[in-house]
Amino acid sequence: MTMPLTCLNYINGEWLSAHTEATLESRNPADWQELVATCPRSGAQEVEAAVAAAQRAFASWRLVPAPARAELIYRIGELLRQRKEELAQLMSREMGKPLTEARGDVQEGIDCAFYSAGEGRRLFGQTTPSEMPNKFAMSVRVPVGVCALITPWNFPVAIPCWKAFPALVCGNTLVLKPAEDTPACATLLVEILQEAGLPAGVINLVHGLGEEAGRALVEHPDVALVSFTGSSETGAEVGAVCGRSYKRVCLELGGKNAQVVMEDADLELALEGALWGAFGTTGQRCTATSRLILHRAIKDEFTRRLLERARRLRLGPGTEPETEIGPLVNAAQLQRVSGYMDVAYGEGARVLLGGERVSEGKLKQGYFFAPTILDEVKPDMRVAQEEIFGPVVSLLTVDSFEEAIQVLNGTPYGLSSSVYTQDINRAFQAMRDIEAGITYINGPTIGAEVHLPFGGVKQTGNGHREVGSAALDVFTEWKTVYVDFSGRLQRAQIDNRQE
Ligand code: NAD
Image 1 (cartoon, rainbow, N blue to C red):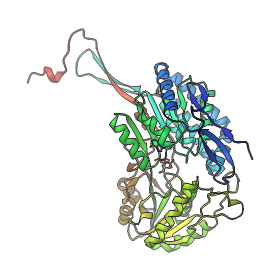
Image 2: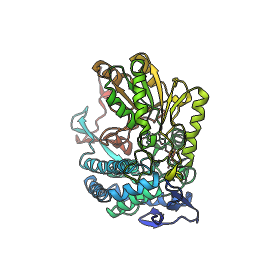
Image 3: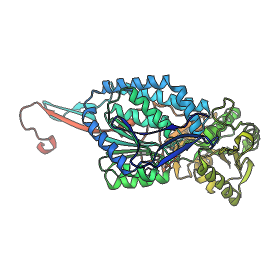
Image 4: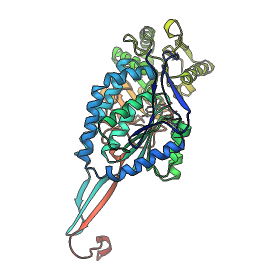
């Protein structure tokens, strides 16, 4: 066993413990005997110091030319590339995802670094003719100030990178409060940012509980923006606090994503997509496929093949190369997913596969849950409406394309969606009529690319998008500038007009 890491806060360029001795533990979810790391259980005092450091650093960081800020982001991308394997191994131990997926998580961070760095030479504004002679009109992007980044454990490197790199290139300074379950990944990431040469105070890291450090950060008056990814319940609270204090807030929340399989679909392709979408990352992705909406004509055949393939998925510790499905992240998640099995039975759903914890042999000290397929699920059942966040997929049967879209849209969430069909007309109808931030045609509900906007509608968010050029709208304010070089007072034409 590897020695546990002692993670510290990073404030104003220094690694510090909290003012209390209290710590939080991060344990390997595949073997809870293994302590991966400890971190400080910080509170308002550490948040205060981190925000003050970020506030001071903002005064100079915002004046560093954007292409120079971008140079540092490029360097971060290079360092992430060099340390990809180290980060992936740590991630796999700390939150359980298989190594191949952990490498993909880090790769998203790398891609995001290079994409965001490119913005250093763009950050485009607008120039436009003025209504008046000898007057110049333009709009430019300016940084917002101190940004609080609050992140979940399921993409412990990619999500902090998605937020941090666009925010930094835009000239903001940051306080990161990572999830309690993944302090070690966050610490290694911030070490890399430090090594790349970010000035003191530009990035700060405060570990702790959401209710304590997280809440203090959201409530802090000098935090100008909160970028939050997590559950819809917490997001609603964070949004309410920000609303009362006029803070900018970007919420990326839960999902109840569905894959539709029509009767004309390439069934083998749809099957591959369903397996990956439902069981990849043990179903712990905000974009995971938790509903399969199947046309009645292919329902039985598709279900038979799905069962046969899902039964063969290999559970194990993420660090072992043959593992396809890792553990759930912690005991609370195991309890939550198990609890939904009672809900499913109570509602009259039929468990075709799984439905229980797996604890044989080397899995006995881990939070493993069998890939689970629920049949005879009706659209209004809780298992078809609520986010389960585990390796559980519900089968719903429909008789038409119109019904499929109606069922797909019939939840409070709107993150990702997928339709498998060979009919081009249906594909375009789906793109038009699905209420979701992301729609895949003939691809699974998971698989975001960092240069395209990411996020959702309804209770999945509040209208913002992560990554791509859309992230710039989160992390900058527009400033409109008029330059009058006429040498006289020119009133806007509307005030001058002689009818
Ligand atoms: P969570 O809401 O429990 O926690 C997310 C973060 O918020 C953690 O860092 C936590 O410490 C912090 N937090 C908790 N209470 C807080 C409070 N009162 N004030 C401030 N911060 C607080 O979510 P989780 O269990 O870590 O993550 C899983 C959820 O995240 C799922 O619902 C999933 O769908 C969602 N998610 C969404 C996206 C997306 O982009 N839409 C991506 C990944 C995960």
